[in-house]
Length: 231
Ligand code: GRF
Image (cartoon, rainbow, N blue to C red; front, side, top):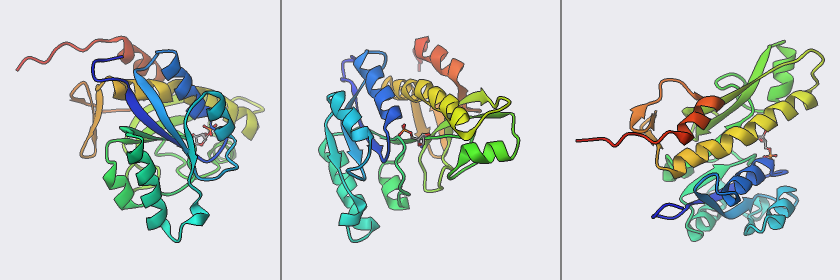
């Protein structure tokens, strides 16, 4: 743990929570200098809640139906996020579109993972669309969240091949395994203070990132101690 303490994460989920678990396990193993302080689900039925409890994480459910409109819903989300002292908000299969004002409030502190090689295949059913288009490569992207859906600056991408005979399920499983590798690594770079958003540019160690990191580069960056900047 650094002198300033592990980076406090709020992880927002709607479903099974496998990315949340991968991140929590990386934190618990000391692989990254971060801690999951709260898991927020938008429905009590989210399978990831039970998983979070097994991992001894604090959880809360903020169901959208119990709020009159998106503004009130997001006010409740923000209260939970701010109340737990989260420094980084990690969307991990959170199936709600957040308003521009919510995104702005947490600018540079809001990450998402999307199961495609953005900017290709924004939105839903990415595995099906890749198979239908007979593409030979697929993957996942970790990006800063902006008001454009799945359109924020991409930090890291993992590529996987599309294999002969792949079904949506086999392809999705290959992509998901890659997601579990890259999301904790990106959070580790955030926790080390190495990565930040400046306007619409990503800075890694103070230098603009000209292309998304690959899985391998992210791992290498995690082991690289940047030279001190002399002024
Ligand atoms: C992942 O495929 C992620 O890319 C997408 O939603 C899915 C969440 O899976 N945003 P899980 O709930 O983390 O298992």
